[in-house]
Length: 165
Image 1 (cartoon, rainbow, N blue to C red):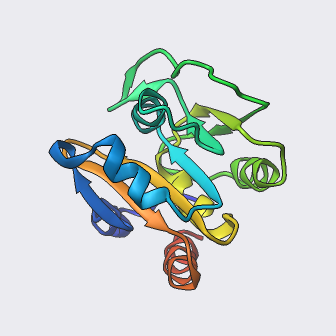
Image 2 (image 1 turned 135 degrees about the vertical axis):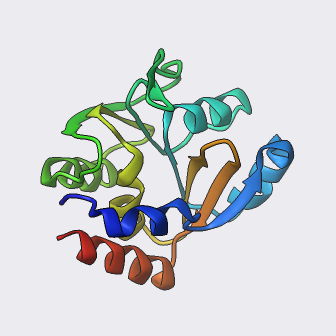
């Protein structure tokens, strides 16, 4: 699935609650995830921030890039399952969807390393995440987006994915 130009602006808006960079604290994150049964971090900086706070995501999706620049992957803390996939920029491949689904049934903590770009993978993550999951990703230069996965989230992400087909 390729991201059409018509959707680019829509996806610049946060899919969940935006916590401004200045307000992202360990206490704030712990409050957001207090009832979570599964925590997903999409992005290297988001994963690293959680790990720095001592929070180990159930699943982390990383690509070794930050704002399109190469960077080291976040430290490999307590990873039980390592998976990988190819996902070019501006696309969501069937391979990446299959790996995400597999990650949700694998023993956590799971790390999915993407060869390409992981930005759009927040969409299939929200669609296939288990009940009571919390998904987090970075909003460049703004903060951290926190999504409490529910039926409304699934409908919203499915409608965006349908527009990409």
